[in-house]
Length: 331
Image 1 (spheres, rainbow, N blue to C red):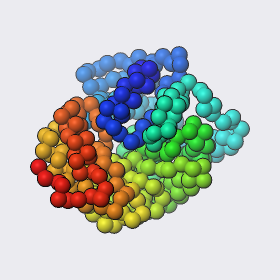
Image 2 (cartoon, rainbow, N blue to C red):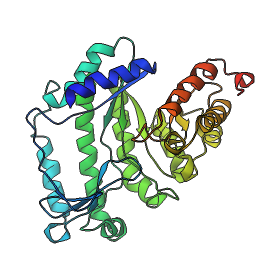
Image 3 (cartoon, rainbow, N blue to C red):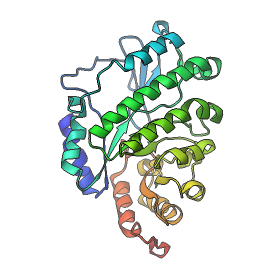
Image 4 (spheres, rainbow, N blue to C red):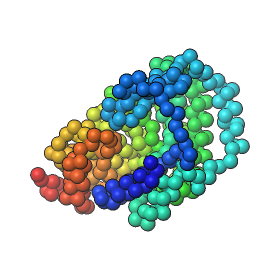
């Protein structure tokens, strides 16, 4: 699998003449995953009884229902113990087999491409035996949630030092804050519990020479100015969640690079004309003046149509040359 990633991803990046090489950690050598029990075509169960389902959109295997009977909730004291142990843990070795793909891409492409390392983030510091309980605990158990945010923040500061040693040019913290209709929790909770962690993480990354390009799906309009204040770029601008890239350009385009514009749904279900319409809107409203990266509003997921991906490249080659000229954007 690792050899296939090293070969196929670089082939794709070169074929599409992309500027960014995206990469991340892989399972270590010798890793053997525990087989799951297949319940039906979309549902699996692990040895602890937790259920996983295949996403209808991305085809990824995603956690669905945790085995609540075996769940032990954290306490402030137990979380503090984890925080205290962090300083005694040795730093991770950048030559470990988990970083084989990153090291390979840095060696092969560093001189010509921007090496972007996908990494973990803090979303909402919640806990619970069920999904519903975890969201309720953001309100009912704020002290524990704040402690979880503190723990994750300290872990992220340690991790970013490793990311810099790996030779990446930037990192992409992947953490969703919004659903298709709203923030997943209140702006107040974000500003009190999550924002300080994000701000400290990015400040540390900047001090190490890394750019930080935030991946975040969903509707995040209520906190867009905080996102613009902290990050260098914002990726996965979900149009179906009401995140209009033209409006964002007007609101935060002077402070934040916008990455997206081509609807993920159109790449899978649409036509080349849909792609051209998306590209025309994005190049007209988000590209002028710089600070725009053309891309999907999520990813090039399973079932993405080849002709639509190639149409993205065609639009970029025809229209994405500065200075941006709307007169070129004709069918």
